[in-house]
Image 1 (tube, rainbow, N blue to C red):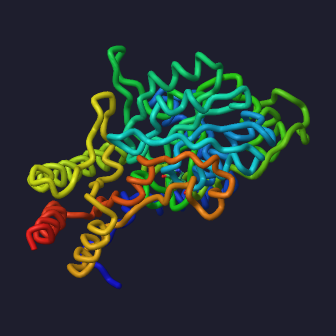
Image 2: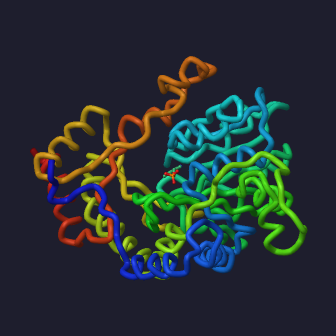
Length: 382
Ligand SMILES: *Cc1c(COP(=O)(O)O)cnc(C)c1O
């Protein structure tokens, strides 16, 4: 079906093809060339992250994180259930057992109060997801990490260019945990088709990260002249993207400011236009916690019931507008439910049943966003 207003449309800033052409003409096509380094430096310089390594996806970056933490069968990882499968799979691949923590009652992010009860002497990582780009309550989470000496991993796939705010100022999401993973999948704010990045904020992981990234060899050290030959020194895989992907990504990064400004404008169009529907009690709008900035990755509303959500989505579809649901809680998934410890996660289930995402993309016009809101109003009035 063709929609007048689809859910997403990837945005091209312009010079992507020129930069890819430059990469082709340079005949440096494999990874870790000039464009890869420019992208990595961009993140290190703009956000104060530790060493950054581009990867072929956020999934890859999470798999690197699980390897870096030396997870072994029987180790435990605490994470939210309302998240994408990759957040969980990366750790299951290493044999870790997952302990799912419930979401907050005001947004789908992990509830710090639920984390502490799940900690055991086998807990090797706490993974947080900044859902919709909104910051998790990081001070509470980092305090728990320090108290039990457990590293924090941020799944910052949706959180590019956003901040955690407190009395000490603003700190970039992805710069707070020991390790952080970003995504440049075509559904994110900044894209390269498929693509991702690992930010290594704790230096103890730096050297090994580079080795895992280069298929388990010390090739990077060799190219810097630090060793006189390179060989197989550890586990590894082919995590790095080609220069063509990095060239595309660099073009996008140069336009990040403009992209973020426009997305934020559209976000507030929704937020203001939907206020009357919230006041009338028909739905709940997403909110920005006082400790979070807003990177306008997503706009969602919470419906009163699963049934009302499917009726609303079907009504919008009949008006040629595509609004979509999101994650099925992982603790209840066909793959994991037999392994789940049986605890109820009511908040996670509630987001699974009632959350509806609205179209938000660069080519969306303000009038179109207003039309989405008007049709939603028409549904509730009918
Ligand atoms: C998009 C996303 C991922 C996966 O990103 P890929 O780059 O497609 O691997 C992981 N976690 C979250 C929370 C995401 O939104």
